[in-house]
Amino acid sequence: MGLDNVAVQWPRTGRFYDPVAPAEFVDFGDMPRISAPTAALAELIAKTGTVRATAYTELVDLLLGLEGVLYATDAAAEDEDPVIDPDGCAWVAGGIERFVTGHRPHGEDVTFDSVSQVLRSLLADGRLAEQQLRWLDSRLDALRDESGEPPQWNFTCAELAVLAAFYRRCADRGFAVYADA
Image (cartoon, rainbow, N blue to C red):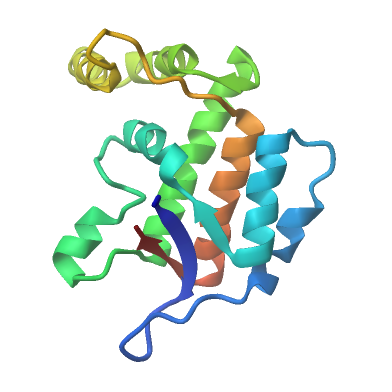
């Protein structure tokens, strides 16, 4: 079983979170001329108000600099509920949006190498560039398998833009995201 990120009403009113009606995301299914993976993601969001987040966890963790972001592990430790609140959804969306914008000059295909290039260029101009680049190198090395091969990410900027749009919609409408693993 994988990780689903499900849009839910915030705050919860009882013991459980109420799912958001898929109608809140119906326009996600109306995206013209997009690739099959992007269309599948958009269609799932439009029909269910849910993202199958498993494929994106390593990338999002790397982009945002934390572990278990889409699993809502920090929230689970604090609140006993694995929920990303609306402010957290805005933070996730913003990080992915900034990455997509920074990636566009590198092309549409998002790979381990292109992610590394984009993050290096973003961090190189920072105040603590040397320290942050060392941190990035250690994170990138940790993602490699035992034979030194990088993850075989196969995303597009459009797909990540749809992913970001899901979290942005949740943030803008005051929804939370429940991490259902």
